[in-house]
Every structure is written in C-alpha cells, then in structure tokens.
Length: 283
Image (cartoon, rainbow, N blue to C red; front, side, top):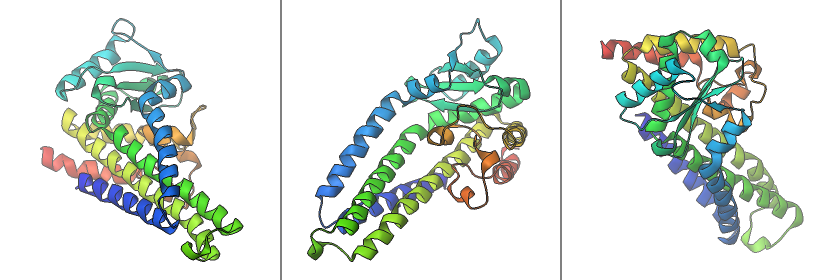
C-alpha cells in the first residue's frame, strides 16, 4: 500500500510540474528549470553520501575499531541479502542515525555516539535494520526524484513571479495576480507532496526493520527513546536539507503544529502504533 501511495504522489508531482510548465505559455521555461534542477540533483545524487558524511564529521570504522556495531550491521546485511555497507560513527551526543548512498552497492550507515550510549544492543539493531531497509528500497533514489521535481516547480514558480511583476507576452500568460498567487501556492503544494513521500518511506522502513529483526518492539522502544531525547535537543550541525535522512527528525524539538505539516517524518505515536499492528502478524 505504501508503495502505491509513493507512486501516486510522484505522479501527482509530475503532473503538477507539467501543468506549471503549461502555465508559463510554452516549454522553454519548463526545460530550463528542469535542466537546472536535474544538474543540481545529479550532483547531489552521486556525491550526496560523501558530502553529508563530511558535513557531520562521520568517521568510518572497521570491525577492529567497533566490533559490536560492525557485527550487527554485518548480520543485518546478510539477513536482508544486501552487500555490506560502510559503517560510520558521528561524534555527536544527540542520538540519531541515517543511511546514505545511491544504491546498495554504494551504501553507508552512520550512527551518532549518543545513539550508541542511549540504546541497548537490540534497539541499535532495530535502528540499523530501519536504515538498511531504506537502502534496500532505494529510498535515496526516490527522494532525489521527488526533490528534482519539487525544485523544478520552485524554479518555474519564481519565473511566474517575475513574469507577473515585469510583464511579458500577455496573450500567452494568465492574469498577473493569478500568476503571483500560483507562484506562492505551487511550491507549497510540491513541498507537501514531497514530505508525504518521505513519510511513506519512513513507514515502509519501519515495517522492513520489523520484518528483518522479527521484533517490532525493539524499534518501538528505540523510537520512543530517540524521539524523547530529540524533543529537547538539536544536533549541532543538523540542516533542513538532510533532516529527512535521519530516523527521527533532528528538528522535532523546534516543531510547532503548523510546521509539522511539512515535517519529513510521521509522528512517533503513529509509527509505534503501526508497529504494534505488525506484532500480531509476525506472531
């Protein structure tokens, strides 16, 4: 069901993008925006793993340097039939984790020092299973596609705003006031759809982790601890651009009710409730 939702949401973003291009009165603006967004996201896709790991000062560890952590990742990778990813530790006291890499052959998982201190071994295994589920389902690729379309829509919306303010070929363009309104609404609509896609992938990764470990309660406990800690603390180097990568939103402590509409993560309560339903099935 979550896969179907993701396909539907990506389709909606594509249709929205095509419609916005038509509103510009031709394909030239659409093509320029798409090319620019595509180039930016192409670079991000192929180099995002290096950039994000460097940004968070992540340190790659071997079996000899972190035998317990390495063994957990190795065991989970075998269960999930995935190549062994690189393993990183982030020198950060706030507990969190993420996966990166454009495909399973170029994947990496990273956990903060705070996560290793806060969670027990079963909970750490559940978190890593969640991240490997992201790798298994190519969530980074899907996120990149969504970001590309959303970025292109944003660029075209900016063109519409300038067109409304400075005029142009009025025969092929809508009323300037309409263009200004659309320039505001369209990027918001694209952002909401993009966030919905991210939330769906989180639900899927939670389910994937529960099926890999066969213990949904491990992830339930981990999510409760992580959310409780992150509600009061924020990672020092956290950025909005990378927030969707983490198992829990690093900015959850700063969210207000309206801002939660654009949150990349569903609520912890909803995630725990869905995992509770899985318990009966797995038993």
